[in-house]
Image (cartoon, rainbow, N blue to C red; front, side):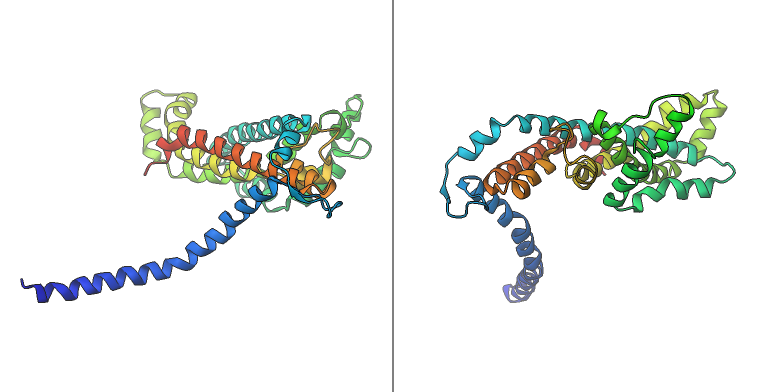
Length: 300
């Protein structure tokens, strides 16, 4: 083959590469604008004295904002509440989701209606969900839980005053349980029924089938569910804002609400920027450990 016959093929390949790069360029530029630029601005404001109530007092502040935030006891509470909230909701949704997925895979009367009911909370907006739980379920005077406690002779509990973070965990778990059930139910239904039938013929009981067949089969689905839920649970805000406003004190303040408190209640943009960077670091640490823990289950 002569050089003249190879040259056109090289030219076509080069033009295809340029055309493909040109098509990808808008997506790359958009990603840069939507992610890198806000991050750089957050880093920039974290080193500046910038309070909206005192616009004349601006300038470079060095690590002053970092010193102030690290000495603020609310930061420790917010980090602890964030980790506890995420871990608790994951345990509840994955645990109950697995059990409900196995249950709804069985034939029983009204299964279709039961599936619709268990999926319904996922389609309710977080603000509406928080209002429903605050006024209809957990209200100490006319809430449904107060009615049940009075029915058995117990004194109603003011949930958002006595156990604010636990109340938030219950609300968020109720919202995200449908997602876990839907994902895990799909995985359960993909299991070959012949494997379960063969195990029954070999004498395996229901618990052994669940332990040695269903759970290994659900590992990838559970891993994906944990990853997706963690991303959204780190940014929980509406439920806290509507119900407890981060209180009493900082008992139910997570990092998202702490950033809101700095930025829109105290108008401290510098402090809010530092808190935002702390949230980014925490999210990346959790993502690192999750990826290390579940990477083998996500391999294709």
